[in-house]
Image (cartoon, rainbow, N blue to C red; front, side, top):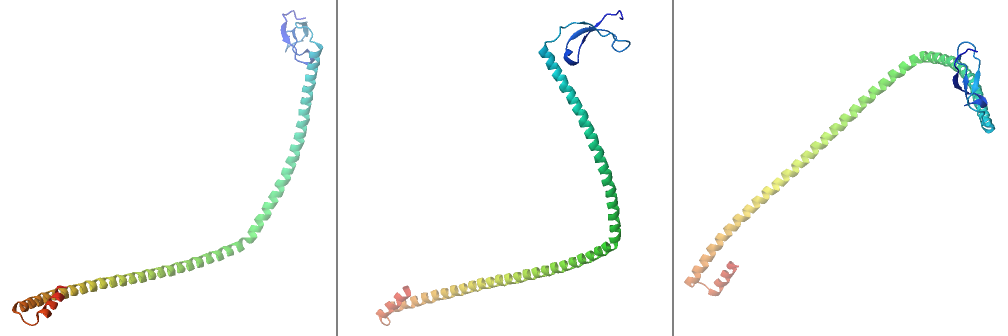
Length: 210
């Protein structure tokens, strides 16, 4: 019809899907004169049945999508209506709550003042208790320090008296040693000179030696 060289095309619909053919080059402009000549032979009947079934499934799925889209649009419109209703109710609720707060503002201020007074009294009592506890702790520390000083003084006195008594004992011991030496000297002199009873002097000397 157009006296032009045909182009090779591939069918993509129905049971002819996949078959190649030479067709009119006028695809977008002018009159398309259709198929000039098939390149592939007709498909086997089994393949044609399979293609037919696949295309039926495709159309059913597209139809289901259209139905689902319509249901979705209806559901979306319903949700929008409910949303508008909820917005109106929410706005009314906000207004009511604002009025209630305006009505209670005086009462709230009074409660805040009372609460502040109670907190101030509590802090005051807390400081008094803390101060009392601090004084008691200081008194206990002073008492313990005094007792400790007394104990240390007593220990010092005991040590001092012990040293003094030890010193006195040592002095008496030294005096006794001197007296003993003198007595021994006298006894020896008496023994040399032969005075008194020799037996008695020997006993005295034995006592001195022990």
